[in-house]
Image 1 (tube, helix red, strand yellow):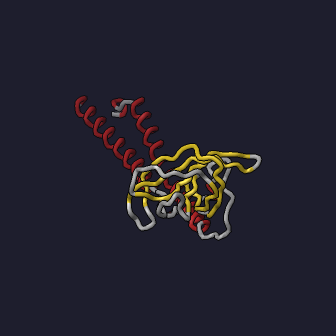
Image 2 (tube, rainbow, N blue to C red; image 1 turned 180 degrees about the horizontal axis):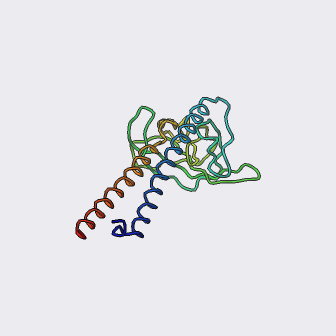
Image 3 (cartoon, rainbow, N blue to C red; image 1 turned 45 degrees about the horizontal axis):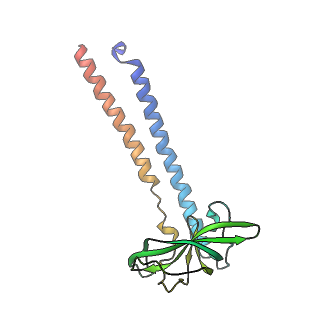
Length: 192
Protein backbone atom coordinates (compact mmCIF):
# COMPACT_ATOMS: atom_id res chain seq x y z
CA UNK A 1 0.00 0.00 0.00
CA UNK A 2 2.85 2.42 0.71
CA UNK A 3 4.13 1.97 -2.84
CA UNK A 4 0.89 3.54 -4.09
CA UNK A 5 1.51 6.77 -2.19
CA UNK A 6 3.42 9.21 -4.42
CA UNK A 7 6.78 9.77 -2.73
CA UNK A 8 7.96 13.07 -4.24
CA UNK A 9 4.63 14.93 -3.91
CA UNK A 10 4.33 13.66 -0.33
CA UNK A 11 7.80 14.97 0.52
CA UNK A 12 6.97 18.34 -1.07
CA UNK A 13 3.68 18.65 0.83
CA UNK A 14 5.31 17.67 4.13
CA UNK A 15 8.11 20.21 3.53
CA UNK A 16 5.53 22.90 2.72
CA UNK A 17 3.49 22.08 5.84
CA UNK A 18 6.60 22.16 8.05
CA UNK A 19 7.53 25.54 6.52
CA UNK A 20 4.03 26.94 7.10
CA UNK A 21 3.93 25.73 10.72
CA UNK A 22 7.39 27.24 11.23
CA UNK A 23 6.16 30.56 9.84
CA UNK A 24 3.18 30.40 12.19
CA UNK A 25 5.43 29.99 15.22
CA UNK A 26 7.72 32.75 13.89
CA UNK A 27 4.70 35.09 13.76
CA UNK A 28 3.85 34.19 17.37
CA UNK A 29 7.40 35.21 18.33
CA UNK A 30 7.03 38.44 16.37
CA UNK A 31 3.79 39.13 18.26
CA UNK A 32 5.65 39.02 21.57
CA UNK A 33 8.40 41.29 20.17
CA UNK A 34 5.80 43.76 18.92
CA UNK A 35 4.02 43.81 22.28
CA UNK A 36 7.33 44.62 24.01
CA UNK A 37 8.03 47.34 21.43
CA UNK A 38 4.59 48.90 21.94
CA UNK A 39 5.11 48.91 25.71
CA UNK A 40 8.48 50.62 25.22
CA UNK A 41 6.84 53.25 22.96
CA UNK A 42 4.13 53.85 25.55
CA UNK A 43 6.83 54.51 28.16
CA UNK A 44 8.80 56.70 25.74
CA UNK A 45 5.75 58.85 25.05
CA UNK A 46 5.60 59.82 28.74
CA UNK A 47 9.17 61.19 28.77
CA UNK A 48 8.91 64.96 29.08
CA UNK A 49 12.47 65.83 28.07
CA UNK A 50 12.59 66.69 24.34
CA UNK A 51 14.52 64.43 21.99
CA UNK A 52 16.77 65.48 19.14
CA UNK A 53 15.00 64.69 15.88
CA UNK A 54 16.78 61.71 14.24
CA UNK A 55 18.87 62.94 11.32
CA UNK A 56 19.73 59.44 10.10
CA UNK A 57 17.74 56.23 9.82
CA UNK A 58 14.16 55.74 10.96
CA UNK A 59 14.80 56.91 14.54
CA UNK A 60 12.50 54.30 16.10
CA UNK A 61 14.01 54.86 19.52
CA UNK A 62 12.79 58.50 19.38
CA UNK A 63 9.23 57.87 18.13
CA UNK A 64 6.45 59.42 20.24
CA UNK A 65 8.77 61.89 21.98
CA UNK A 66 8.62 65.67 21.87
CA UNK A 67 11.12 67.38 19.58
CA UNK A 68 11.83 70.70 17.92
CA UNK A 69 13.25 71.32 14.46
CA UNK A 70 14.11 74.41 12.47
CA UNK A 71 12.67 74.18 8.97
CA UNK A 72 15.07 76.31 6.97
CA UNK A 73 13.48 75.69 3.58
CA UNK A 74 10.04 74.38 2.57
CA UNK A 75 10.19 72.30 -0.63
CA UNK A 76 6.51 71.46 -0.88
CA UNK A 77 3.27 71.10 1.04
CA UNK A 78 0.91 68.26 0.24
CA UNK A 79 -2.53 67.34 1.51
CA UNK A 80 -2.98 63.85 2.97
CA UNK A 81 -5.81 62.19 4.88
CA UNK A 82 -5.78 63.10 8.55
CA UNK A 83 -7.62 63.24 11.85
CA UNK A 84 -8.04 66.24 14.10
CA UNK A 85 -7.41 66.21 17.82
CA UNK A 86 -11.16 65.79 18.45
CA UNK A 87 -11.45 62.82 16.03
CA UNK A 88 -12.83 64.67 13.03
CA UNK A 89 -11.74 63.28 9.63
CA UNK A 90 -10.29 65.62 7.04
CA UNK A 91 -6.86 66.64 5.80
CA UNK A 92 -3.35 66.90 7.17
CA UNK A 93 -1.19 69.57 5.57
CA UNK A 94 2.29 67.98 5.31
CA UNK A 95 5.37 70.04 4.49
CA UNK A 96 8.70 68.69 3.25
CA UNK A 97 11.35 70.70 5.11
CA UNK A 98 15.08 71.02 4.83
CA UNK A 99 16.52 70.71 8.33
CA UNK A 100 20.21 71.40 8.93
CA UNK A 101 21.83 70.23 12.15
CA UNK A 102 25.54 70.57 11.64
CA UNK A 103 27.11 68.54 10.12
CA UNK A 104 23.98 66.72 8.90
CA UNK A 105 20.96 67.78 6.91
CA UNK A 106 17.77 65.96 6.11
CA UNK A 107 14.44 66.43 4.38
CA UNK A 108 11.82 65.95 7.10
CA UNK A 109 8.08 65.67 6.72
CA UNK A 110 6.24 67.99 9.10
CA UNK A 111 2.50 67.57 9.64
CA UNK A 112 1.58 71.23 10.06
CA UNK A 113 -2.01 70.79 11.18
CA UNK A 114 -5.57 69.74 10.35
CA UNK A 115 -7.93 71.26 7.83
CA UNK A 116 -11.32 70.42 6.34
CA UNK A 117 -10.19 72.10 3.12
CA UNK A 118 -7.86 70.77 0.43
CA UNK A 119 -6.42 74.25 0.02
CA UNK A 120 -2.69 74.19 0.72
CA UNK A 121 -1.73 76.86 3.28
CA UNK A 122 1.10 79.30 2.81
CA UNK A 123 3.95 78.52 5.17
CA UNK A 124 7.59 79.48 4.76
CA UNK A 125 9.13 77.43 7.55
CA UNK A 126 10.66 78.22 10.90
CA UNK A 127 10.92 76.52 14.24
CA UNK A 128 8.39 73.72 14.82
CA UNK A 129 7.75 71.82 18.03
CA UNK A 130 5.80 68.59 18.04
CA UNK A 131 5.83 64.83 18.47
CA UNK A 132 8.03 62.48 16.45
CA UNK A 133 5.79 60.04 14.58
CA UNK A 134 6.69 56.91 12.59
CA UNK A 135 8.49 57.71 9.39
CA UNK A 136 10.00 59.62 11.07
CA UNK A 137 8.00 62.80 10.71
CA UNK A 138 7.12 65.59 13.11
CA UNK A 139 3.49 66.25 14.04
CA UNK A 140 3.36 69.94 14.93
CA UNK A 141 2.05 70.84 18.38
CA UNK A 142 1.00 73.63 18.35
CA UNK A 143 -0.14 73.56 14.72
CA UNK A 144 1.40 75.88 12.15
CA UNK A 145 0.02 78.08 9.34
CA UNK A 146 -3.27 78.83 11.14
CA UNK A 147 -4.36 75.18 11.03
CA UNK A 148 -6.17 73.18 13.72
CA UNK A 149 -4.48 70.62 16.01
CA UNK A 150 -3.95 67.10 14.70
CA UNK A 151 -4.50 63.94 16.69
CA UNK A 152 -1.28 63.20 18.55
CA UNK A 153 0.67 60.15 17.45
CA UNK A 154 -0.25 57.26 19.74
CA UNK A 155 1.70 53.99 20.03
CA UNK A 156 -1.55 52.09 20.58
CA UNK A 157 -2.48 52.90 16.96
CA UNK A 158 0.40 50.78 15.64
CA UNK A 159 -0.99 47.44 14.45
CA UNK A 160 -0.02 44.18 16.11
CA UNK A 161 -1.65 41.63 13.83
CA UNK A 162 0.94 38.86 14.16
CA UNK A 163 -1.53 36.56 15.92
CA UNK A 164 -3.80 36.74 12.86
CA UNK A 165 -0.83 36.04 10.58
CA UNK A 166 0.13 33.03 12.72
CA UNK A 167 -3.44 31.73 12.50
CA UNK A 168 -3.34 32.09 8.71
CA UNK A 169 -0.12 30.06 8.44
CA UNK A 170 -1.52 27.29 10.67
CA UNK A 171 -4.75 27.30 8.64
CA UNK A 172 -2.77 27.05 5.36
CA UNK A 173 -0.80 24.08 6.75
CA UNK A 174 -3.97 22.29 7.86
CA UNK A 175 -5.65 23.01 4.52
CA UNK A 176 -2.66 21.64 2.59
CA UNK A 177 -2.69 18.45 4.67
CA UNK A 178 -6.44 17.95 4.23
CA UNK A 179 -6.38 18.55 0.47
CA UNK A 180 -3.38 16.28 0.01
CA UNK A 181 -4.98 13.62 2.24
CA UNK A 182 -8.17 13.69 0.15
CA UNK A 183 -6.14 13.52 -3.07
CA UNK A 184 -4.14 10.50 -1.86
CA UNK A 185 -7.28 8.76 -0.59
CA UNK A 186 -8.98 9.32 -3.94
CA UNK A 187 -5.92 7.95 -5.75
CA UNK A 188 -5.81 4.85 -3.56
CA UNK A 189 -9.53 4.15 -4.11
CA UNK A 190 -9.07 4.34 -7.88
CA UNK A 191 -6.21 1.82 -7.74
CA UNK A 192 -8.25 -0.71 -5.71
